[in-house]
Length: 233
View 1 (spheres, rainbow, N blue to C red):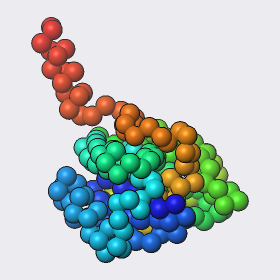
View 2: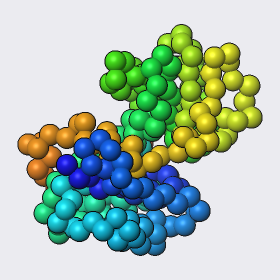
View 3: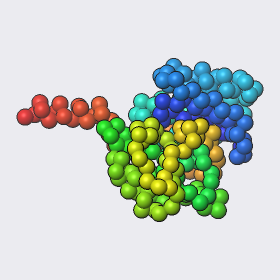
View 4: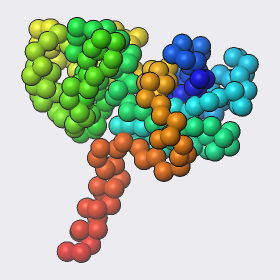
């Protein structure tokens, strides 16, 4: 199976090709550019450099969130359009799960986090057990204190990865560290590897109808609701 993967959940725009669990190519840019401008050129270059034809793609995998509301919409819309045009299957992957895929090491707790704004984080907890990535605690929106509390509850050495720059200034508890910088951020190759494991030819037949995993409403929606309440008073 040849999988084309897209991750636009954060400031990183990443695309990758993976064949049967082997990463063949990856192209990631973290320069603050808008994904609406950079994603399609990256995809074009990836396919051109690897001499891959559209009809060769069996599965398109896309990061579904949590993450940037705009980034997720751009990634999903692009993936749906390609899957429809190329007549191939589409699979959505949890962004935090894909982050945990970056570090396939047993014996440690993995705490992928993404910025949820206003001092909060999206956080989930994972662990590798006998070669399988197991979710120990689902995604929650937490502050810094609760983030560390959830890690402490598992009582094992832990690595935090993802959008954790604001945590660098914190004095982390013993046994808790930030992951190496080269493994911190989302990678489309990890999205591809998770998608190939999760892939179900029956469940993944539907191209349209996938919904990004937002967790909470966007700031724009919250502001709109506040304005509506003020107008009604």
